Image (cartoon, rainbow, N blue to C red; front, side):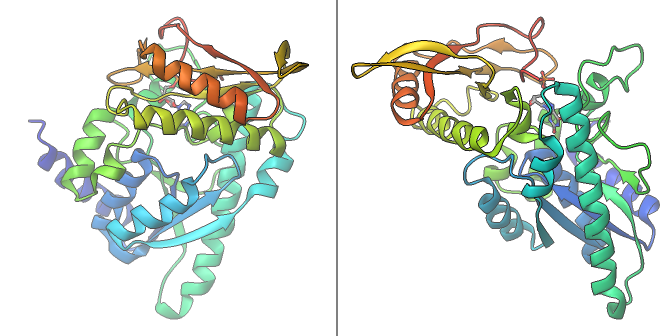
Length: 327
Ligand code: XMP
């Protein structure tokens, strides 16, 4: 029967069976899924797991610091941080197509993991460590289904860790959450001792802000979106709405411009889209009826404080027919 304790015990046994006496790495994204997957694998194989945090430059404000602080503090896991901003932005230069972006990001993640794995092996030889053959991912059931891995389902989008993987992948994948939904993952996280700040965090996609800029991804656009996103998050948290909202993507329509007026001058800037949704499992979602005062504060602050943004618009589409993210 489904109890969280059973799921944890069975999954630890299955991980031990799969990895044997080999070593593994786990990409940490700062999100719930990779944190819970890592915590399970750490329970199973201890220090033969090294977590790798890839700073791809597509993170939100303050996110990188949070991974190091919260997760390492909670688990004491070995962590390797890789600064890969240049690499990702170079690979994404000139690319606007959403699926192409997702595949590039998925591929670059793997290339960085491969490099990290060989460095970990080199560092660990004296300690008797062998090769790193396994890559742990926090793939959930909905990720598999929506990437076309489920039975009879169309490919909606390539989640970076499923449909976005390169074909020449040499790692064997360890995916302990592959049969679980988000609420179950949160229960498992609590069961293995992760704190609420990690377990209750709102979802954030592995490809990060790279799939929240409609158009080409550039550093300047990322900086602009980071500012707008930080304002929206701050105001939603201050209004006490974090639990009510499943997540609120903030999207930059980089290829769209509209005319506005500010002070006594004409502006010609970009729109920012707010996409607050409520959901049980991200397979379906409804747009959140946010209080007008909160929307007003977010809109006023973003248009005043973020250069080149002169409009804030609200996405009032359910899923289906919209998806939660815009790309
Ligand atoms: P969509 O946009 O498909 O999103 O309605 C459903 C949920 O999945 C998240 N998402 C991702 N998470 N890698 C992830 O780790 C991805 O490539 C990815 N794409 C979407 C999205 O934020 C939402 O919670």
